[in-house]
Length: 323
Image 1 (spheres, rainbow, N blue to C red):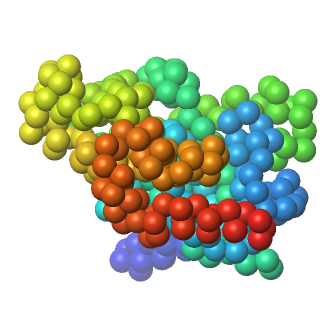
Image 2 (image 1 turned 30 degrees about the horizontal axis):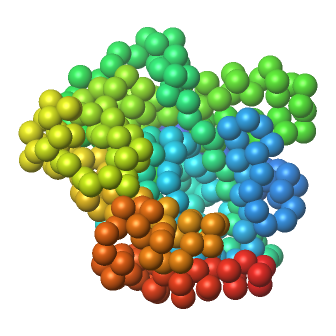
């Protein structure tokens, strides 16, 4: 009797091992296909949007740190690796992981691994909160009652089913007529799998404005809109029905930075854009973004970008000419 049980157990283990191998082979085949399809779709370094809300990126060398503002999006790497910094938090991901961002926040990103023979290849799918909410309702998934804060960005393992949906979406690039009908369905599937996965709470909190995250999302929107104005923490906290200390705590829990740090990053990024795009001098740019003291602006700019304002802008222009 024991021998029979042993044989049965070994058979089950063998079946499980075979199934795991099939899953691993399927995932690797999908990773290879995703890489090849992105290579075919974007043959030169840069970014394209072949389907609405789907962005493909290619780079033949590692990048310097790029300052930008994140948007609600699902990000997958087909080849290479990248690091995203939000405040003091760092998130590194590669073809085995995906990144999910759910709030517009100032971030710093850097492509870590890329070469001419093996370029960095990635895709970003923009996430519409209304669509996320629609999928959540259709799935019959209740709003989370957990009042905890949910970090606005995180990285998780990319499971085989989610990867499979991503590959099917990219396949549609070769079939525009099918894409018109099928792309919305596959996007819904991707959102569904995200909702059911490890980062489901992050997506649900944004979609249904649950917990304290919706307060912080409102605060982020306010700060982004009025970043040139003096920061009045007491006023914002009062509007949100929160104490000043509570607002500070929850803001940092979601964004990984204080409201003042958040405002500073927005101001300095906008000043950099003004000097680059509108040829403003450092003093004029400083005043335009809300600084009253030019020397204070210069110190904070150098601390963030690694060089004084005009030297940094000259370097960026030189790099653009070089490419």
